[in-house]
Amino acid sequence: MPPRAPASIDKPVGERGKAPLASSAAVTRRMAAQRTASTAPELALRRLLHARGLRYRVDAPLPLPGVRRRADLVFPSARVAVFVDGCFWHACPEHGTAPRANAWYWGPKLARNAERDITYSAIYCLNLRGGKRGRSGDRAKREGGNPFNIMTPVAITLLVKNPSHTGCAHILYHDIGDYLTREEKLARLQAFEDISGVPWEEISPNEAGDWINKRTDEFAQFMPMGNKNGGTEDAMFTTYSGGVKTNRDAWTYNFSKPELLKNMDATIKVYEEQRKEFSKQIDTGILKKTSQDVDRFVDTDTTKISWDGTC
Image (cartoon, rainbow, N blue to C red; front, side):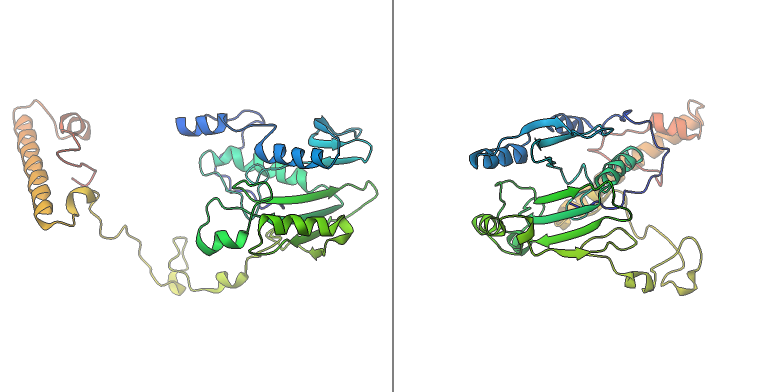
């Protein structure tokens, strides 16, 4: 799929290959489970190609001078390389997600992948859809069946490199259609026969790098809710606040009035006990009115009370 603009970077870019620690143990396990080769889409594609009598090399280097890159499948005699790219790793604008943790590292890394993907003279993208993950109802039905019977969407992208080409790449795109079953999609692919049979639409990215579902500039014309950087004369609100909040909703909200009163009585009782005991220890000189002594003194048992900086 075509690349999208990288996420914003709020920290210095790290060295290549120096990956930061994962944000949690769950992320570590999830990333470790990701296969770098022979993924489910790759295996499904190999089975289909092999069933049609086609032979190829797997995870092979590109036979191009000065190019250090490997392809998932290579057909040497036809001089064709096939890349089965994931939406996350190649910043797919429709299905990819921008990492929130360690964005200073992932933003530039994914941007380099996307930049490498677009150094071509022509790009043909046949979007087969079929992505069910994260969708429900009509949105999932509209995606239709998946050619590989997987949850992630599928697209066939042909990347053409012509050494004599100059300027931007020609981008041709075709959406297979809405609500199609897996069998209907495969039938359409067979009817296309080759690249010349696909009804391509030439598209031009906008200034933001959008290929399809292009954003509109109308949003910038809307009246802002507020502007912390000044210019509040055109904003709805000129002051900023967290609003009405308790910072202890588990204690102060409840569907049952008797339970709510019980919870409030309990936490008020603990608060008063703590306040009186702390005052007594200050009077005797054991403690001082410092935040450090308060932190050491208070009972942090969350089954009794919830503390924060406003108490």
